[in-house]
Length: 149
Image 1 (cartoon, helix red, strand yellow):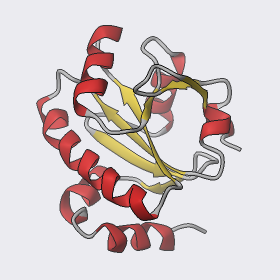
Image 2 (cartoon, rainbow, N blue to C red; image 1 turned 135 degrees about the vertical axis):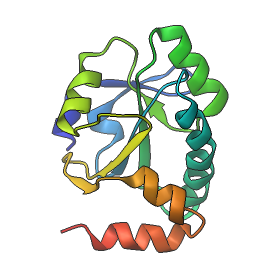
Image 3 (cartoon, rainbow, N blue to C red; image 1 turned 30 degrees about the horizontal axis):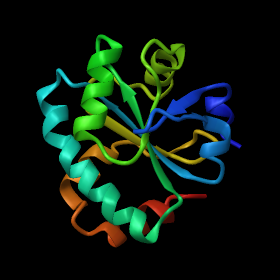
Image 4 (cartoon, helix red, strand yellow; image 1 turned 90 degrees about the vertical axis):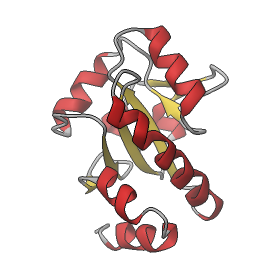
């Protein structure tokens, strides 16, 4: 049970509210720290979206949560709907955004951490790994799964 996101409501593309504890139970989670105003984020997001579309074909247990650093809700939702994949996001203004940034020591964006449903880090710098090895989806997934204790 994802206790590290206890009480958090996620939203999807359709605007549905999903309790994080239910939605993420038993999942491998990518926490994607990004923002619409960040040029490196806008360059990485399409690569992440492509990677996610491929990995979901064989690994439905993988989920991404967009943790936005946008300055307002409108920018967050527009960036999410126009550029990101079929994943969820933490709504603008949630206290959980800053606590996740602190917990996972996110100093710059874009950043991505792969965590298990307990919030334990599996991959510290998934952004670089996806950037460099993302074309080999199954190979990268196998590397990540080998890190799970």
